[in-house]
Amino acid sequence: MSFEFRQLRYAVAAGDSGSFAKAAARLRVKQSTLSRRIMLLEQQIGLRIFDRSTQGAVPTRAGAEFLAAARRIVDEAEGLKSCAKAVGRGEAGRLVVGFSTSLSAGHLRAALSGFYRRYPDVDLHCVEAGWEALMRGIATRAIDVAIIPGKMPDDRLARRHLWPERLMVALPEDHPAAASETIFWTDLRDETFVLPKLDPGPDAADLVRARLRGAGGIPTILMEDVSRENILSFLPVCRYVSLVAETAAGAPHPGVVLREIHDFAGMAHLDFWAWWHPDNGNAALDGFLRLVGEGYPEAVRA
Image (cartoon, helix red, strand yellow):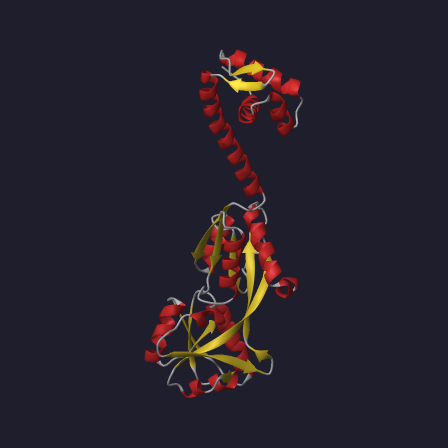
C-alpha cells in the first residue's frame, strides 16, 4: 500500500472542516484536486473515508478511525518540519560553548544568559577547559565556539574580538597594599606572582613581565598546574599574589581581596575572543555571534 503524505493532509483537513470546499480553500488548492486525491486515497486503502452530500463531507465510522491515525502522522510530520526550520534558523538545536574563565560574573555570563533567554529551544552546553582541549574540541566540532582571553595559536580558526575585561590583582587581605582601592604595577615590583598554567595564566604572565620590566623590576612568576580557584584559596597561606579577570570578582574567596591595577597606560585588562571552525555550519552559532554583536557592538567592531 502506498500513498502520498499530501493525501493524508487533504483528508485530515476535510475531516476537520467537514467540507471539501473549505478544506481546499484552507490549503489553497483547487477543490477538484483535493477531491480527486482523497478519492484516490480511498481506492488505495480500500476504505470509504467520507460520506459525501450537498451539505458537505462526513467521515464514516471506519473513516473517523483512519483520520484519527492520519492526524497523528500529519501532526508529527508538521512538528518535524517546524523543528527543522527552527534548527535551520538557529532557534533550536544544540550549541556547545567552551571557555576557560569564571562564570561567576562578567560579560560571558551575561552573554550566555542572554542567549538562553532569546533561544530557549537551543540546548546550551558549557565546557570549561584549557586552550589545547578547547582547540581539539573546535577541530572535532565537539565545541562550537570557545571564549578565551588572548589568541589561539591556530590561524585556521575563525575569530572575533568580543570585549576587554579588567585584570585585577588578588592579595591576602592583610597584605599592606590591600588597604588601597587602586594599585599600580610599581607597587607589585617585589611580589611573587603565582598563576595557573591554564587561562588566563599565560597571558597574565606576559603582561606581568612587560609591565614590571618597564618599571625596572624582574618579576618572579610561578606557573602552577592547578585551577585559579585553588590558587586564590591558597594565597592567604603562601603570601603570594595572583592575577584574575574581573569575572572572578563574583565569587568570594575568604582571606583574599581583589584590587584594580593601573599604570601610565590606564587600567590593566585582558581581551576576550571568540574562536570557532570556519566550516562549522551550526546556525545556533550564528545566533550566538549575532547576540554578542548586539550586546557589545564596540568590541565587535574592534
